[in-house]
Structures are given as structure tokens and as C-alpha cells.
Image (cartoon, rainbow, N blue to C red; front, side, top):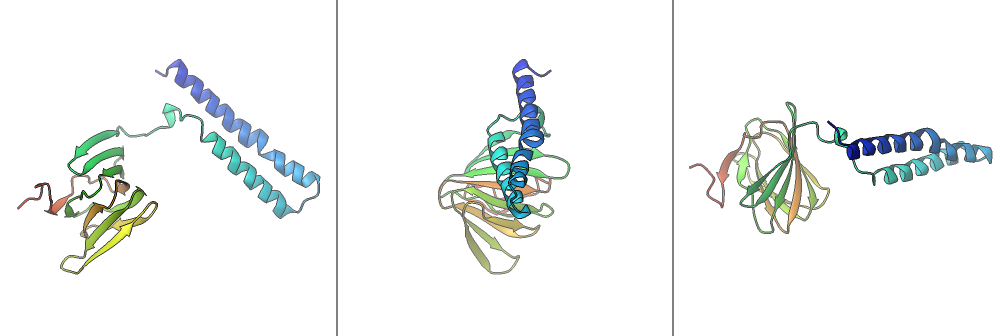
Length: 187
């Protein structure tokens, strides 16, 4: 059952969306057309207006009915930091890895799991190896992305405190550890 506070947030959010898209968005279009501006200027004004309206809408709290559709939300403490599982469905999973400076995840690979990593904050060194191939390393900063296909040996080393977004196929237990500074690799 939804509380009165949450119900009021839903009503306010829906009213705001109606106000922005049905009432306020047409204003710059009518004004620009009324004063005889060319179509490109009218469209530019409408886009600017919409951008401002969406930015203001982002300040409203998100109603609970729009939050995560999964039962995720578990934080797991790891030797290198922590892991927040924020989404888990039959088709995908999402995590935020918080890695402390100078800490490293295992050198690992996945048999089936396909994942993509994006650094949200901080800087990390991503070491990767094709099986039997030479090692390579990339330094990734905020908003930089790396795809980890199944079979690619890889490891994240935090150069400073970092948050890394991981979106993957749902096989969360598909981890083969090759090396681990915390003694978790199987001999």
C-alpha cells in the first residue's frame, strides 16, 4: 500500500509532467511563430525550453512506482571495497563497484557472462589479456567504457577511489579467478 507522502509525490510528478509537455512546451513555439522567426529558430527555442523543463523535472523525487523493477539493492562488502547490485532480471544485471585506491579485483574471466564497464568516478587501470596472449592495460576515467566479452582475462586496479558501473548478462556466479591478492583464487 502506498503511503500518503508517496501518493502525493506521484500526483505532483504527474502534474509537473502534464504542465511541462502539454502546457509550457508549446509556448516558445507559438511566441517564435507569432513574431515571424524562421522554423529553425523556432525549433531551437523549443529544444532549449524542453531542456530546461527536463532539468527542472529531475529535481523532483522519483516516486517509488518508477524505481527498480527488480528485487535488487543488496550491498556486498568485498576485500577491495563494495558491490551494489542495483538491478537483476532474467536478461541483465547491473552493479556499482566501489574500489578503494590501490586495491584490485581478481584477475578473472567469465565462461558465459558478457559485461560492459563504465567508470563513474575516479581512475582505474583495466588490465586485460587474450588467453595465451600479451597483456594490455588501459587507464580509464569518468564516463570511459570497456567491453569484457566471455573468455577475456581482466582485472581492475584502482588508481584512486573509484566507482565503476557494470552492466552484464545475468550469470553473476560465472567467475573464474586466476589470481587474487586476497586468497580467493582456486588452486
